[in-house]
Structures are given as structure tokens and as C-alpha cells.
Image (cartoon, rainbow, N blue to C red; front, side):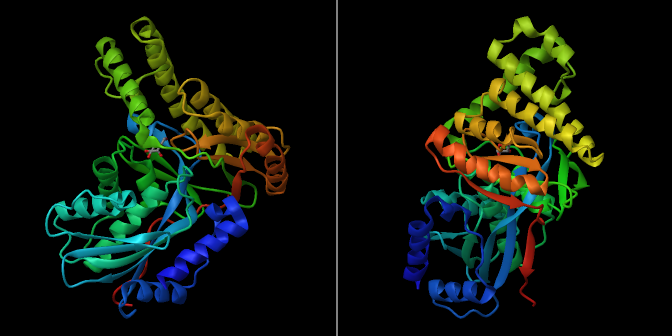
Length: 417
Ligand code: GLA
């Protein structure tokens, strides 16, 4: 049956090319359970099921690790894990997308070993083990319809789902906010990405039909309802793979750190770029490397845009909100240097469509996706324009889907049910 999973994937790839990335999770529970039984050679009794969504960030990019504001929403696309409690401390993991089964033990520090995708569950298991929350392991099968490498937090959704599965089979209690922090720890220590808290937090704590204004300094949140009748969000994947681990993300973090070092000499109360105003930055301009100055300017202006965007959305002023999205994109492109020609082309194409209010790159950058906000009727026009112009301009095919805000992580089927 392992064969069947693989051949199903191949036939989709052949038939649909890039579209395979955008395959919606349509497997029924019974089909997933059958795949689990085939993969683990065990019965399907006492299976638990958990899910954790990917995310799209509407605005507030590269602000989370500067103690700033972000405004993401959870997607309806998600990582789903079926798991069965084991009696010993072994975790066995299989993925519907990977041929290789992963096995590790949680009765000692979890080893950092190949394959690469296992870094996420390994790291989360270690974070939970260090909190003394785990006694037994599990057999687990992972499914996802979050496009991998699409800048939509497929890894955070995998981390949060892995953590929730481990907690559930152990009957262990941990608040979702603490689970998000444990997953961030995993990303830092096992995946090697010094990420902020946004992705794991929204995956764990998202609320259906709401976007979440998160203050990354004190982790306070405001859930802001989205008016689905008047606005829709289109996600367009440039199909340029982003690779945060390859240094650029870390380089940006270091530049922000450098800016704070310099600015805090003149303004000792400054602990993070969150505390810096444009006036303060101007005062320090001569002491700052010009690149570091621009990086800091992005973060300072982006924090304000995020608050202004949230206010415009609450006031249902879509045109104004959309302008903040474009401004965010240009700032990420020009000051922060994390866009790429493909993302710029997509934003440019969407900017010409009547009824589209705003568009911007979303996530870490260097590829991945853009998010487009507009009226329902405009979405089809945007898709036609993208399909027509993007291949001509870049030689690539984009994939896209319209989304509403989904719910955060959930145990769908518990041990007791
Ligand atoms: C990645 C990181 C987040 C955040 C974004 C940029 O998605 O995981 O923590 O820094 O990039 O906003």
C-alpha cells in the first residue's frame, strides 16, 4: 500500500504538473485510516487525529523578531496527523509524501538525524521531553495540503500538529501558546532557522474567519473578524522555492540587531526596533551603515503599517487597507531586500486589476507566495491576468487558491472518542 501512496502522487504530478502543489486534502477519514494501517501494519483502533493549519500573513513582515506586530490568518489548508499511542518510547513517523519512515526515541535527548523533514517532529519531541510531558511514543502518519516551500508555513503546521499528536497520545496538557513556543524552539534548535513566533503562534491559535493582530513582545492578541462577504484573499504561489536557512534570514536578523546596538547608544531605553521611531532613526543615521539603516526603516514603518492596516480593516476601508499592503511590499523589496523579481511581477500584475485592493509578498521572502485582497468578482480577473502574464514575464507557472481564515490547531479525534 506504500506503493499506492507513491503512485497516486506520481499520477497527479504527471497529470497536473505544478498543480500537484495545490492539491487539496480530500482524503476521507476512512481512507487515511486505511493508509495508516497499511503503513504501520497494525489495526486502526484508538487512532487519534489532529490538525494544524498553514498561515498567510496579511501584513507585518520581518517584524516578529523585532518585538513588533504581525497580522496573520490561519489557512484552511493544514497538516493532519493520524497517530496511535505506543507502549514504549519510540516515535515512528511516516508521511504520505515521503517514502522513508523515520524512527527515534524520546527516552533520551532526541537525536538530530536525517532525513531533513524529520527535524521538525524531532525538535518538537525534544522540546516536550524537556518539559517532562512525554512518557510514550507513537506511530504517526502525516498528510498535508499546505504547499511545501510556498511561504505558507508548512513547517510550522507540521511542528504544531506533531506536538499536538504527541501531547494527545500522552494525555499531557500544554496550552496552545506554550505549544507554539515549543515549536519555535524546535525550529531554532533542530531546523536551524532563527524564526520569530508568528508562524507557530497563528497555526496554534488561529480563529476561523478572523485574522490575528499579534504583539510579538508580550504575545497579546486581538482577533479581528474578516468580512467574507466583501473581501476575499487570493494566495498566489510564485513557485520559486524559498530557503530561509540559507543565511539571508539570519543576515536580516543580525542587521536588525546591529541597528539596535547603535541606536541604543543614543537612546538607552531601546531594547528592540519596536522601540524606535523614525525620528530616532534619523538622529542615528550617520552612525549606521546605509544597508542597516534601510533594514531598520522597513521594520519601523512596517510596524506602523500593520496597526494602520488592522484599523482600516476594522473600519471596512478596503481601499486604504490595500494601499498599506502595496506599501509593505515595496518596503520589503526596496528597504529590506527580501523580495524577488517573480514576486514583484505578481504584485505588479494584480495591481492593474479593478476590484483588487492590495497585494504583497507574504512570509520570509526570496520566493514563496503573495497575498492578494480584493472583491470576489475581481479574483477571477486576477487569476486570468496571472495565468496570462506571469509565464511570459518569468518563464514560470504560478499556482493559486482563494482562501478564507481557517481555525487554529485542533484535536479532531481524541483517545476517548
Ligand atoms: C518566516 C519566519 C517568521 C517571520 C517571517 C517574516 O516566516 O518563520 O517568524 O519572521 O518569516 O515575517
